[in-house]
Length: 240
Image (cartoon, rainbow, N blue to C red; front, side, top):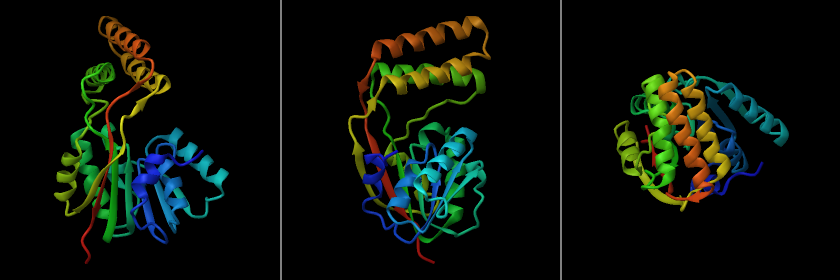
């Protein structure tokens, strides 16, 4: 699997070669692969999803990069790395799946493991403008809040994440758009419908039925769409 262009753009102006890196929220390992291609000495990919962990390990095996990368099945609220041990921290499309209270704790953990002079790269989606895609995400959030009392998605503006990490001692380096508009393909939208379906399974039928029906209808009506922006925020931790 190739490294997405968004990851390449986000890392292009950062010094990665020879550095020890952390990919926070590994997903399928896109940023881990990008860091390795950029010459990282060592990459630690952290995810709390067993399927994602297995997928990243398989991807590393296919690339032959297992000696430079370690996959940790762990909660980002307790990163299994020592204090001041990482020179580059990345979070690609992570923050939007974290509620504000979770994000605050994780920001503290990412700061704890950052070495003096470390670089932080956060890539995420700007708040989605009014559109059927946004309506589908609103249905997903409604089901998640009914099921678990937490939203499934929170789209933070770049200025909001900048303020968050500045509060943890980071200084702003740059913010840039790395993709606009963002393509929301039928497969990707169907994945969001699957989230609605899974969360709705534990709700009473009179609540679950209309919400799932609405999500399915929205995804079918949208088909493919291109809306919104993905941005990259880079920050630097002070030298000792």
